[in-house]
Image 1 (spheres, rainbow, N blue to C red):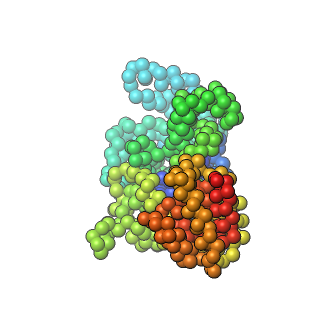
Image 2: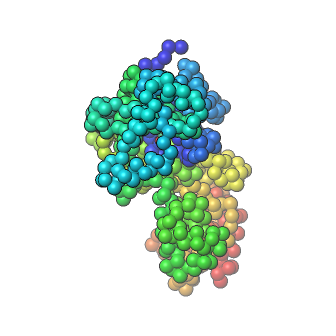
Image 3: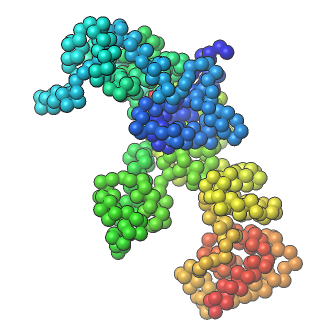
Length: 568
Ligand code: GLU
């Protein structure tokens, strides 16, 4: 198989879930490879053994697969009966932990033999002393090359490496200027002497990130590196290493970052921030911190530390959120999956954070709605912007609502059921138990309004359970006020419904209108609110006619009856 002429890669460190910023990087790399009929590599950067896990790598792969960003080369994932990944060009393995002896060690020795890398034996305490001296003299600390000078010949350096004496390997940094040619930002110049002799292999024998990336990008044939701007600071080191090896540098494109709308960086810590605020509000409203800690099964001292922002424990944040019933902000792709977002809306929204197609609709507005197929035909590095993206959750939610409501009913039901199977298994079995006619009614009820599958699920929870209680304020306002007008309407409505020969949404609708007219109501609002309370315990439900049709005649009448009797 001839090697493709464009090869991009996404190289996550498996130390957690896939962040939306990572998803965008992966999507752009994927789209560029598709557009150029190239290949897209997934590489797992797991040389930080303490922080990496197979579970995280698997989660990242599943999130990518779910988004539809499928890699051509990389670890193999079996997904919905298909295999994603593989090694068609024999450049694997794709986990860095598996490349130490085969790839990194030989490349380390190549540089040592050229005199461009050397073992250094200073202990961290010794280095710390030097660092402090530099700080006291208000100078930037640079390693002083003492080991390079002390062991001056290549043969002696190799002897030391083989002796087993503890050491790291340092790169002999070039003294000339370094230029990073960046397709998004233009040329980025690093002045002579800026680079120090950074470590390329740690004392534990594992390569540092900088070294592994350079060896892998070369040996995997990567031609284009698109990644977030936070990596720009690393790139001069990568270019210097490439030049030391005589590798050609890939083409770089560093992409803008993604921020919250308030200008803060979008990060996992936002969850802790939200939970902290909810906790502080609860305490300010008279909640007792000690009791809360006991209910949350958290030590009072820990809760206190959380409150003071001394720790950002995700576990604590999640406990608080569950207890106080607040929603934590979605940050990672897994959060959005859980919340019932569609991959299409997420992809579309993320693509616009840093790229736009630069096309107009016939009405002159910017073309904003597109899918991955469109992106893979039109994506270009030239149209990646320089300004940081703002993660506007309302816009994403509105994209999602539009994607969901545009789905055909059957597809909607299947996607909803797939979501529920993964995230709300109990609800999934309820969905599965419905007959075709009820399914259609249910979809008709929630699809136009619910912005996520989770919203759709709560919107129809009433179908599966009678009200456990009634909203007190709503009862006062809509049932008891005006001499119990709501209750009177409910009695009349119940009589009208009972007489209906069929019980579908249109006939029920006629009954609503008839009762409203008979009671000289200016509109059916008062009757609708009273009925909603009877059916759901609250004033929130999908369209009333559809809600009644969904419950069926017997169940609707039973709920109205129970509500009237309970509030007489
Ligand atoms: N492993 C790095 C990360 O997860 C990415 C490195 C790169 O793209 O060069 O941030």
